Structure formats: structure tokens, C-alpha cells
Image (cartoon, rainbow, N blue to C red; front, side, top):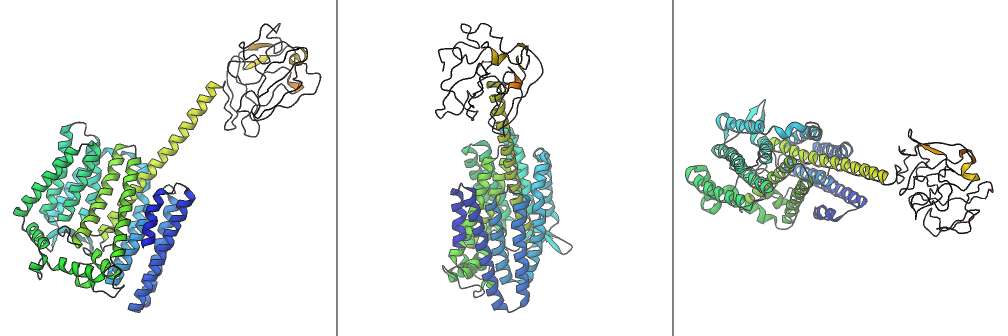
Length: 587
């Protein structure tokens, strides 16, 4: 586990794709090795073959998750997928150790949740209108929470869930996601202080309903998530300070108004004072953590069952007892790496709504981990929050996998935009080069035609460019034609005639133009591209882009042939050439 955790952070420094892929493969191997060893220990303790069959089913499931996400969504974050599978793996091990029947139920829910999660990225890509439905999200979220507060069955004093067909559903787990979408939409369209006040009021209404339902853990998660999203949206620390101050005042008020809040706080302040009552759960949690030490008592060798609601609320304490504090710290660091990836993904998103959704879901996940760990070690009062993907709870697993998949979908959406942006940039560069170089873009070996003044010519004499010295050979210094040396600048080429496109001649995708006048059959045909304002240039190799050295022409029939030229390393540039009939070479 320690090595896996170490690689979860070293991958951030790897820029090479092959190196990152190697680390991801090593993480997968370490996860399966840990999973194998743990279930062999459980089999030796329980001595039932059904444990081995259950282990095989879990291996198939975990391998399928890795393969499906990698092949269906190659742009997805591999680190997030690996961490998701590792957390599920730890949860399967510990729930199997605590209750085999509950582990079977948890596994079935995880399989169903994974099928749903695989569809989420497709929905994110297709349904772009979800950014405009924030009022609907707000109404649905408040409505569901109000329904729970009014009609849900009470479990140990708190109204949390409904039971439908023998399946317990906790709506607040799913409202967390809807709430993030609602707040993201409200803050995205908040152009003034009035809209921010409206968003704050609606967020406070969510929290108030949860407090009335005695779901204090979810109320804290909603409050923390809103503060983070508000700061990211406005970049104004004053709002955060004001929110913390308001939350503190509300907490003090809740302490005096609600008896269940007061009981939780008093049990947190001194759990041993009411050891047999409200402080029993936290006392047993502390005993378990201290008994485990750094390396744990061993899987199946501790007494985590003594902790009330250990499968749901105190999974971190059970892990600390049997697997040790080092393992528990590594588990927290893995969760932190997930949060870091969520934040990194949100920073890459250019769409404001998507950015707020990513940071909101990341904050929700981090707050939930903090509350469950903090409650178990007596850092904060107990809140009854599950450990995401590790604790037992079907609604928790389903909602968390949906959260991970939403972030993955947003990440892939941004990667798609980056690919399109890069293609657009390349096209713009191509068009710019085309404009600057007379319609020819040779860097990618494309055969691009241009329409211009010399797109088509009439040739009175097909051998004009060979039999006479008229026309432009290479007139860089004095403009298109060196009038002082040529009697008739049009003589070698015939008369230009505007007309249709004429394609350049390319060679094997290297983007260099052929010498169109090198063949006797083409007569004095001009090259189909222009350079630097020289419409009639026959020196197709005068630009470094055309990386082929011009051939030596030895046929005496071509009066305009250079007799000698050299290449000094600049591809296609003639250093010196002479013409028959001229005493002075020009460079």
C-alpha cells in the first residue's frame, strides 16, 4: 500500500507517456497482489470455499473496470481510475472481513453502479444543455430533501432514507451531486451581488432542511462545498470569511436549539464521561486505533465488531486496528491524490460551469473523507458520514462512482476541446503559410493549389525558356524582373492569362515543388507557386522548405541551364550559377 501511494504522487512529475503508463501498470499489479494476499488470509481464517469464489468474482470485476475505462475512454485519467479501484478493493476486503452477507450485497451494488458510471461520460458529452438547467436542479434538490424530512423513516433519531422493494435509498447522497450542479449554475450566471445572495440563500435552505432531518454530516458537507465553490467563482476571500462566521453563528444556535446536536458535541468533548451512552462509539473507535498501532493486529485478528455501526461510520477505525496506522495514513493520501486530480482537472476546464462542477464534486469528496476520518480520531464530533467507496452503503457507493465518472467526463470533454483546438491551430498556421508563400504549404507534404495572376499561361513557343534568355531567372535584388539584363521579361514564358487553379507538383509527401521546367515537354511553363513577390521564379529550391538539392542539367539544348552550382548545407539553395552567354554569375 505504501508503494502504491508513493507512485500515486510520483506520477505527477512524469511527463513521458511511457513512464506514466509503466507506473499505472505497477499500481495495478500492487493492487491485485494486496487483494490476493488479503483474501488468502480471510480464506484461512474462515475456511469456506465461497470466499475464494467471491474473490474470483471481484478480480474479474476490477479487471473489467480497468479494461473498459481504458478502452472506452482512452482520454480518461488513469490515476483516478486506479485510485477508484484501489478504494473499492480495500472496501471489499474489510466488509468481507466484517460481514460476508453485507459484502455480497455491496459487491452487487458496485457492479450496478459501475455500469451506470460507464454511461456518465457519454451523457456529459452529448447533453450540453445541462449547463442551463440549474433552476431545475435547485427545485429537485430542495424537494427531495424536504420529502425526506417529512416522510422518511427515522433511524436512530435521524431521517435519512426510504426503503423501496427491500432496498434502502438515502436521497441526500444523490442530492449532493444535484446540489453541486445547481450551485455551479447559479454562480456561473451570478453577475452581481444580488445573484450571489440568491445562491447563498438557496444553499442555506439545503443545509437547514438537513439539520431539521438531523443529518448533520450531510449538512456540513453542503456548507463546505458551497464555500469552496463561492471562492472559486468570485475569487473574493471576504465571502469565505463571512461564510465561516455565519456558519459558526449557526452552529452555536443549533447547539442550543437542537438536542441531538448538543448530545453529539458533549460526547465529542468528553466521551469517557458518558462511556456507556453517547460516548461509547467514539471511545471504542479510539481503543481500536490505539490497539492497532503502526502495523495493525492483522486481518481478522482485531475486534472491530465492538464499534457500533463500524461498517458504515467507523470503517477507518477498523482499518487502523487490523491493518495499522501506516496503512490508514496511506489510504488518506490516496484520497488526497484523488482530490488533487479533481482540482487539476477543474483548473484545466475552460467552461466556467464545468470548472465549478469539478471543484464542487472534489470538495464534496474531500469533505466527506475529512468528516469520517476526523470523527473517528475525535478531531471533530461524529457526523455519521461514510468513507467513500470503502464503507458499506449502496447509496454512498453509487453516488461516489457517479461523482468520479462526472469528473472523468468533464476531463475527457476538455481533452476533446484541446484536440480540436490543436487541429484548428494547425489549420490556421497552414492558411497563414499559404498566404505568405503564394498558396503553397509544403511542411505537411500537401498538394495545395492557388489562384493568382499566373494561374494559367499561354505558351507561344513551348521551348521558349530553353532557346532564349528572356524572362526572369532570379531577380531578387531588383524586383520581379531584372530589366537591365533582359530584353523582354515576358519572352521566355509567353503571356500570362488569369484563369483556373493550377496545382503544384509535390513529391512523396515531403512538400517540395518539382522543377516543372526541367522536362523538355513542359516548355517554359512557370512553377505553380510564387515566392517573395517573384511570380515567375523558376528556382523552386530557393526556399529552405524545399529540401531537395536541384539536379545538374547537362543537356546543351537548355540555353538557360546553370553550368555549375554548389550546396553549402542549406537545402535547395543555389550558391552560384551561371548562364551560357553571361559572363557575370549572380548569387
